[in-house]
Length: 344
Image (cartoon, rainbow, N blue to C red; front, side, top):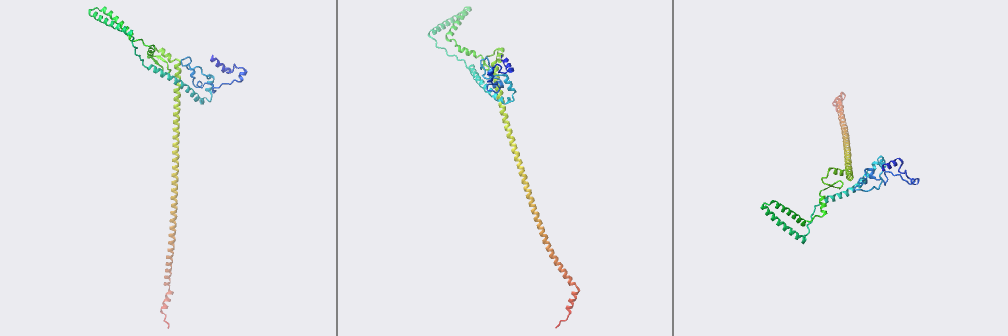
């Protein structure tokens, strides 16, 4: 019936049976409406897992529609809504498993507790008298059995021993009353086992068919799906946190390398600038030194030139004097002047 209704809804629309007045106020349901079950959209709804079992959760108050689920899976917003719906399902499953684990703990404690036999109640005076009579009979019969055994009357001795056994049973019944039903129930449960998946009590060492029937049962499979989803969800969240941590560490490492690279580049630029300043300073000193040397050489040349000029002038003067002293006219005049008479 549900499948036929869904098929008609797909072919004719969900408002096919509404009147014109009802159609005016009708609102088409979409997969992202708050009345749609997000758990059903993304995975499964726990309400559908335990129908007609001891863990039946009843009917889900939200909408389950295969057509809406199909439109959700084809929607471009699918990936952005999956984390939200999975978180809702995770919270629901956590509550289920928490309640189940409490039941499992109580069942485990129930199986583990020891059977405490209460002390026997005090024997009444009437029972004490009956017990005394029985003990006296048992004592007399045992003496007779011993005598018959010595006389070789084995059959008669065995007959008396059977009477002794009956009297001992009566004595035990008087001294040890029957255990209460509660203790018998606990003793029977000591032979039971507990399913850790769904919390059901099982008969220990039961037949394989019954064990297989339990494993494939709706309650066991339903809790198995719930636990499996929680394990996958937690593992995915842990992996996402680990990936995020590794990404942060990688980003921090890249920033550190970038800072080191920038620092190294600044150091290289600083070293290059220092070398350029040193080289420029050296060139300036070299230019200054070369200029000083040139000035010194110019001064030396000037000093040397003036000295050579004076020496040349002296040489030329001496040469002229020599030339004059060799001149014949000057020589004759000197001779005449030396021979002329002295006039009074």
